[in-house]
Amino acid sequence: MPEPSDVTLVEGAIHNPADPRHFMTVTPADGRRVATIADRVIADSATALVCKEVGRSIYDPVVYFPRADVDPAVLVAIDTTTHCPLKGDTEYFDVVVDGERYAAAAWSYVDLVTDNPLRGLVAFDGSQVSVG
Image (cartoon, rainbow, N blue to C red):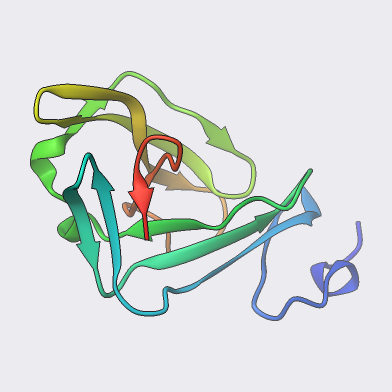
């Protein structure tokens, strides 16, 4: 198998151990990032990270918030998990705001495949949560 440096010229990229063509970068977000639902702030961070991933496609960037910067009252753990061969295993949460439940609207990586800083950070489904 080729070395990751033979596959991409992206400096600092983190590669899928089984497929170096599947990679991501994780960098600090520029400035403060805020997540809202129905005009209610559910996360606010000056130390969020942005994950940019390339696999079968070039995926939209995802903002990951430190858990301490997410309102814990809105996260309800659910019995849903997924596995990404690049990032690892997730836990999912419904987000509940003002009695309204948004299904599987947040996730967090709990078991990592690669050495990356995403463990325990919280990301939100952009189709349900506004992140800016």
